[in-house]
Picture 1 (tube, rainbow, N blue to C red):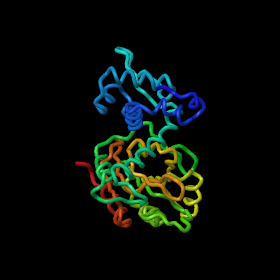
Picture 2 (tube, rainbow, N blue to C red):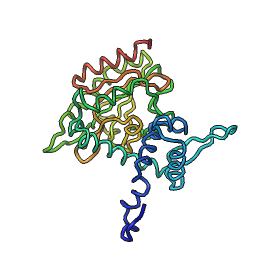
Picture 3 (cartoon, helix red, strand yellow):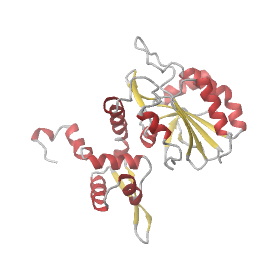
Picture 4 (tube, one colour):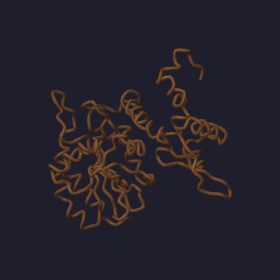
Length: 287
């Protein structure tokens, strides 16, 4: 990419060198989704081996990706995000949020969506999708947690915009109810536990914000922070901007012990019904 002299000290221009190429952005999107091997990337992107090799080489050279050997004969590598690459995930999610709203016309400033939207189709297409094995989020206890509990028969993931937030004079449509949602999962927690089903609540709030709420409400399950948008990027979850922050829209996923999404509920209009449905799905044997 040819740069003007004034671009040498411009962070936007320098970032565009890495992300400005169409294929570079889509390669990063797929690696964030867990497609880290060459053949998987080629299949997902429909890209020629020559072009994919070039793009991966450039991203490795820029320090956004690193290669990790997983097979010696023949030599095969996985392509993993470096710390630099992980810091690009909020940019990818922001691009998706912008595209949903202004290009596809299906995004918005509410915590929900219409049932004929692109967001709705994208979430429901997650059924059968495995979550990346190494995906961890920081919990309200300050520790890193795997998004899917490896010791549980199933894991219920519910995303919500935020709790304990003073929405001020500009309330966010669809956001009220997050405290109710957490309380209802809390009250149903004994039933989930008896069924050996884990429950994880996820928002883009910071861990200390979640910790304050968890203590006040005696939340017995982990609240996980996706402030760095790692889960949002991995599953292309719908977001919206509210109260100065990019927030997750409300949805429910039921994931099995093999980290595969088995059920999706989105949009969520009936919060008590969503909790009941999550319990039914999580305790019904897969067919």
